[in-house]
Image 1 (cartoon, rainbow, N blue to C red):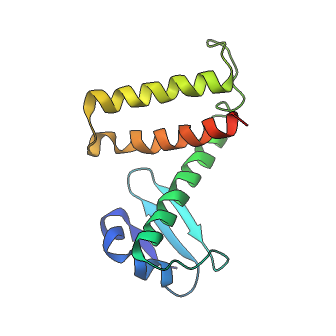
Image 2 (cartoon, one colour):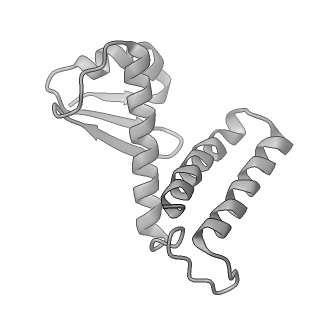
Length: 129
């Protein structure tokens, strides 16, 4: 099992993807999200493709972890204080994340905000179906 941290990720993504055995482990130091990949995954042809696959998997794991922790509240809102649909509530959360980026810019302080924003956009896409 290969462990790659965010600090070494950029330089070693190609090695990470092609490492043996075909099960690899990735931990994002900021969110402590774990991503497991196996030989059923398509082989990447470039380092950029490996980075894309790793970032997508990290977002997937973040969404699954938060969905379990919050009891699927994004797609099935409790509507205790808010009375909107899942789409309305997600749009509000997306607005909040965009305002944080607008006010603070894109930097290390808002990196988690970008991940949350990507996650909310995925949830919005699901809620709109």
